[in-house]
Length: 335
Image (cartoon, helix red, strand yellow):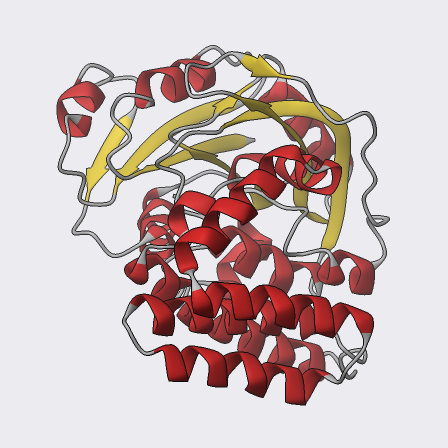
């Protein structure tokens, strides 16, 4: 079996060596390994750093188009039977590929293998994992989809190429979160296996581009998030219906709350406070007046009034809360 390790990067030259070395150090006896680095138009020293791995890793440079387009470039170049993904600011633990390959070999019906992710700080120092980890059962497609916002991450995902290719390409609008997009659609089409081990590490640093506290004030990131979520939810709804079923009640409620928050923040940052408060009120009118909705609405009001204060409060919560720590251990950052 041939394994394609696909490393996506954008201005992560400073982290790239650790990622590449963690792949090259993998031992996969009996399997062929190819390493592909996809550079999404970096303006730092990524190209020069990648050149040091010529002959051991294939380097592909493309115009900047977002992480989804970087995924597409990597998939198009890959010739393996399985695709193992790695963000350039993350790394794999020793033995990761051997365990993933063994899982695919043991069950030809598997389309997706994932595992837990531990955290490390910006310098690469390990951070303690949460005391316990709980994920939906691998055969529980509704449960897996409900947890899709929290329990996946690029550097924890490996796909069987034959199962993934019918879902490609990732739409252009999915500039961020292509891992969630592919995970969600593949869950409806194929078997999933979770290896209950921490086989990769996610680096926590200020340049992570997911909607963490420091990026809640980035208009481009907010627009990309809104576009991606709407594209993903529409695609997921279509796939669920094509599967002969309907989404459960409130299936998209959390996603819609995140989109509403992004709209509130974007409007407020751009100086349109009226539109920000209107977006919050519109979301509440659609969501009812339950305790959760009232709580989310109150946080949106804070975001509308003061995006910077909201981002600071959110960052504190994200760093200190136990639920956030659990999410971080299971979820990969998007760049």
